[in-house]
Length: 298
Image (cartoon, rainbow, N blue to C red; front, side, top):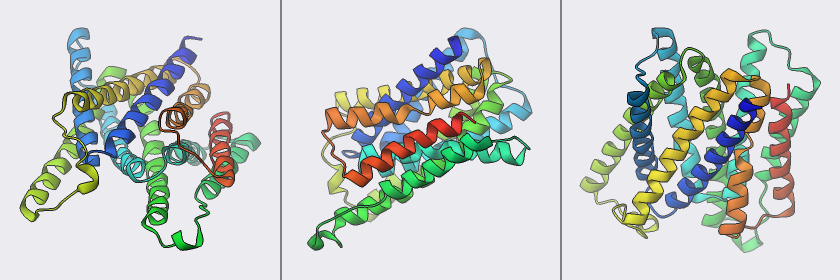
């Protein structure tokens, strides 16, 4: 029961973090939101380790945590970019199908998936296809909106791969020490994303690149800084809760519950941003969520 509560908490925290991150990415440069939120998350885990007297894990666990940091950062970058140009209610469920990656890793390790697991993978892939179908008006078929929709789908799929690898690697690292693994993972992601932010900022300043679509807000405004902070803290909290759930409980059950975070993101997008989906897209979102559940029930 405790592991289930941890998993539910991680789904809630990830859902809120993804919604806030996607919302801010539509008004600021994506890399600014990601790098800033990751730094806030790093500050959180550093404080937690200092208070509990935790340090760095073993060399083996550090390698897995390092890999989790790289894949997680790559997935997060693709995910936030997809959220900034696409429909949150579509992007979030597609990215959640990344649980296919741990399933494939299990297959390679000799793990039996079973009929339900394969049915879940089929539903997840079918959901991705249906969610990718748009029905624009004839005069809109070559519009910027349609191109952005297609790009967001591709980015969401890349995010799913990154997230799937992160789930697998972080679980392995957390078995030897949760906070220690989270520390290495977050240091890695901050180093990668922080470097990307520095390079992109330098490039923009020297090439006079304008970002009119991201000039609606100043990253220095108080509420934006609070939003970035909350995004980073909730993302870090979700990582810790997921790691604790996967270590203390059944991985199949806890990963199932944790991977339901798109439900929170979609609900927030529907009720806060009033996003609307077409019939086929709604079916695709539903299948993606059903597939996520079935895969985790392997």
